[in-house]
Length: 328
Image (cartoon, rainbow, N blue to C red; front, side, top):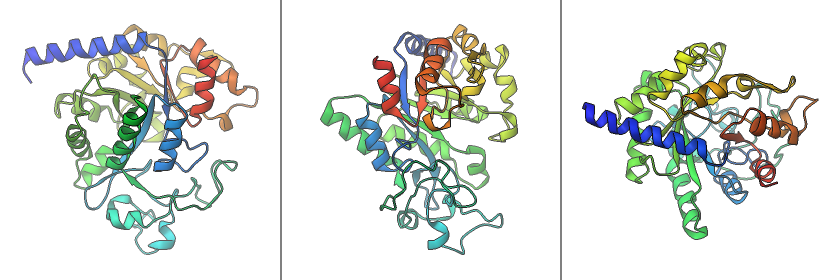
């Protein structure tokens, strides 16, 4: 990419970042509407759309036949009946990987509410039925949202996460290239469109912008180093120097809520202010009304996030509650 193109791209990114900071806070439906229906299913995305989400999140992983599917993990057993349908298909670590199954095989699985390693629901009061929910492709999610947008004359956007890009490349799959190719097929690689791509791997975020030529808005997700999400040093990314590096390629950051706000002490950190000083939007994850400290109400948590921490958007399992709060 020549110098002139880099300068133009930098101007576009700066304008997009300023616009993001000036706009009203956005509500991002985290995995659809998992507070009510199994995550990432088309039904869950439809409910999130009906509840008024500004963006709906799609986590992407790859199948054996190189199809992009919407699934939070590279593994299957926590949200599907893969162990019952394909009991011998686990790897040596005992996990069942989406990459080892064709799309047809994955479509035969039933998606259920997320469970832990003991088989218990992670959130016991959420969906408790056994309806025929299925894994969906990214293209199916694109069609769903675009058709709803057409019919309701809305512009609900896509908020895409590229999952485990380094692991996928170790397996011989370039998930980022597959993602960009599909976005371009649907004319969605455009900074003016309601589309974000997020990733925990900062090396991949830089690659998306500089090597793959992504024009779409980028968000750098921030984890904790001991989560081992990637080889990225998240402690560094939370410093002024790290945030400045992010601002060179991305429009914002996606921090974990405790990184920007101590909910129990009801006190914000300085991370949002530092990010805003560099023109970066801040979209933290994840608001869950059923995972709050005992001394913090739902309304108070949202008030602390939007009014005290001054975030620009929020990932939420409960789009309806977040929308209701912002409309008051």
